[in-house]
Length: 199
Image (cartoon, rainbow, N blue to C red):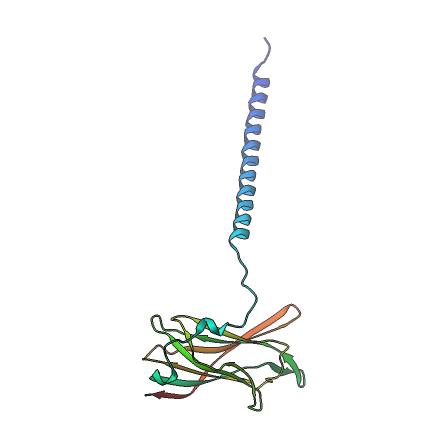
């Protein structure tokens, strides 16, 4: 009598091995497909921010109002560092951004002047010289590029803002960024109110 159980067991074992290999391969294929789909979705949905462009002030025109209509006015001093000193006095160049944020959710903020001064207090650039309107929760940014060394280590902005009625105090700050090789750093400085006038 021939023993047929051994070939049958071998066939069953091979079948089980084949099923296991097929399941593993199927799982790997599914994983790879999901990963590829995620990468494609990320490429489709990810849009890197656009390069900085100075704000077009005509888009912020304050129509129908003037400074005389404002019940609140304030000047804010914002320190800016176009460079810092290190290694026995060597200058380290920095890129700086002035950020003016209207933190009020319902009322506009008006800005009448944004001026950039150097270390000696001399006017370098006037960014805003007329009344403009910043919508609720809106933000204005002004960039001092790394290669712009006119301001020096003691540079500053003077920002003058106003409001027709009581509003949330705006957030006015400067963010400084520096890079060297593969290393980078950043820090910020908040503006210091100089005067506040309620009419």
